[in-house]
Length: 285
Image 1 (tube, rainbow, N blue to C red):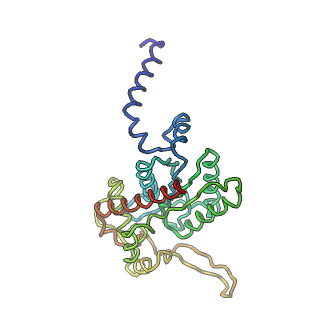
Image 2 (cartoon, helix red, strand yellow):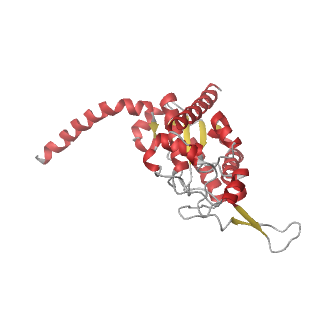
Image 3 (cartoon, one colour):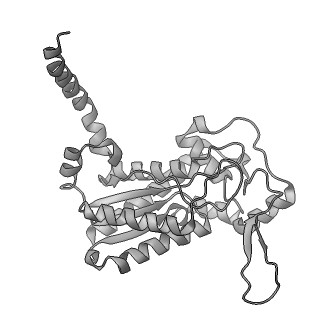
């Protein structure tokens, strides 16, 4: 094809593609898949953005290390389809606390600073409702996110008219609350069910492998029981050193054998419904 004909041909091709893709783009506003023009136009339609916050960490021998990141993104994508809110790029690096191979821990304070800066940058784009959607439920990461949101307001009083919210999907899901009551946490049946629903290729076949029975029992009593706390001097005020118990090899805190696609679908619906309700409250307010 002559060079002069290439540009018109490409233009016609892109026009045809855009017609076919318009419906998808109008349903979910995925930030990193949008152009300057598309973002600018969408800002006239919505001032709400969802930030999927995940982590890169081990999830036993049966789930991939992006499990929490995938969960956060999928909930945001579904809520965006229902509301038209933006979905910001997924944050896949944060603090896990675990130390098994595959886990990438980022300093707790850096996580908090990074989240604060993402909120600031999105506000500078004109967004008014910022929703942090947690896919990772670790206690340290939860605190880092909460502190980030709180410090954003203190450090940027010029954005007093903006709303920042944190969405923890497991708190609004009756099925997740039941799983917690059952002692099912990290990589257990509720997380496995969700991955079976929206990422079945990332769930390894076969019987899930677990740690030694006593370890599993302790971690099902309290997910922070994976921690080993020591201090050289046993005296009040001496700070404990926290690390992962060396005998942990798998890290599953629950019973993934109870997982099912249907359960994953129901949890996904509960999580999405809760997020949509939060978006509605922010936009009405």
